[in-house]
Image 1 (cartoon, rainbow, N blue to C red):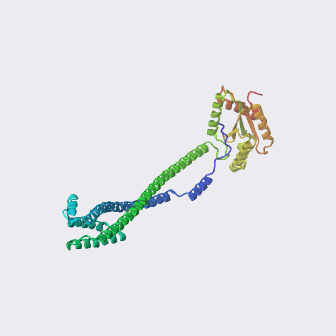
Image 2 (spheres, rainbow, N blue to C red; image 1 turned 30 degrees about the vertical axis):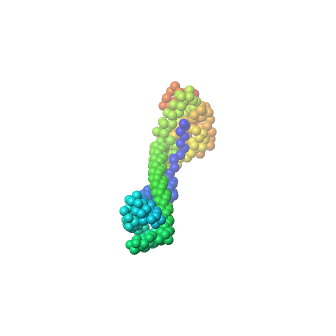
Image 3 (cartoon, one colour; image 1 turned 90 degrees about the vertical axis):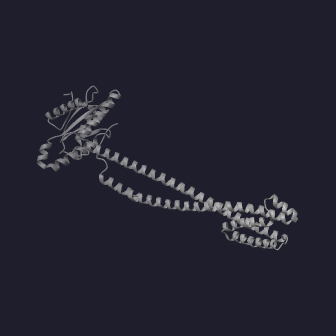
Amino acid sequence: MKLSVHGPSRSPMLRDASSVSWHRNWLPPHTLRWVWLLFSVLLASVAIFNLSQVQTTNSELAKRRLLEVSLQDLVLQSMALRHLEQNSSAEMRLELEQRGYISVQALLNQISARLAVIETIADTGASQAAAQELRKQLEHLDHQLNRKLNLDSAQIDQWYNTLGQLNSAAKQIGFEQDSKVQMLQRNNLLLTLLVLLFSVGYVCQLLWRQSRLRNSLLSEINRLALQSRTDPLTGVLNRRGWQHATEHHMQLAQIHGGVRGSVAILDIDYFKQYNDTFGHNAGDTRLQVFADLLKMNFRPGDTIARIGGEEFAVLLPNCNAADAKRIVDRMRAHAPNEVGFSAGLANINTQQSIAQTMAMADQALYQAKHKGRNQSCIAGKP
């Protein structure tokens, strides 16, 4: 990886603007917590309502089971009543004894008791009306027995018709209760899915928010790390950034068997006198102009750093010192008159440390200074 930093990272103002834009598009954490709380209360209310409906339905189902059992018994007793109506009195007594009834009156008493249970359970208009009608017919049958009269076949037929109406009403009640149970099951399933989706969504949103915060933290750490390696005045690397970049380059050179390259050290001529004459602001401007000149003339993959007050260094991968000198001389030809500079260059040797290479380039720089400044020298050459 080549480290080439020619300018600072995104400004804090831009980061703040993006943060504000993000908060406009997404709910802030406290609002999200209130939404979660309100939704939880709503789900709890629906769950409590469903629980009450389930309890009511269970009670209704218990009544329904008792009603079905009572109707079944009533139908069997009515069949015995029909059978008694069709037989003689001697056969009637025998039939009653076989069925466990001492007399017809005992059978009617059992029917009356079962009908009383049904009247208590029946809570709809049709079932209540049918139960009341059966009660009237039962009283009429009982009146006939009390008067020592035979049971009327037409009355028995009417009894069966009314019993059929009661049975139909009971089936309608069962159908409605089954529909209600199915509706409650659907509601409970929907409620479960909502709770599951909401829980998963809330957890995913928290994980997503944590991921964004983690990424923001990493970006901020990287930005601060980059700032710690960047010169704030010129926007190029400082000495720490230079050391990191050159050490990384030397590691790659050793891994890949000696990558060619060179180092150039450039020093602005007579910078102290210029700074004392025109002031520090003018000196800062001269440094910025010189840094911009370096950025425009060197390649994007070259690493530029300010390693001293008016001293700059450039790492040129895959470029020897002679080629680097031609770049520097061409840059000098296009430089403003007030930004004259001297340069020393040295080839990188993987057998030497970067500090040794820079020492050689520094000696070449002093050589250029002694020759009259505003020129370039290569280490090891006169």
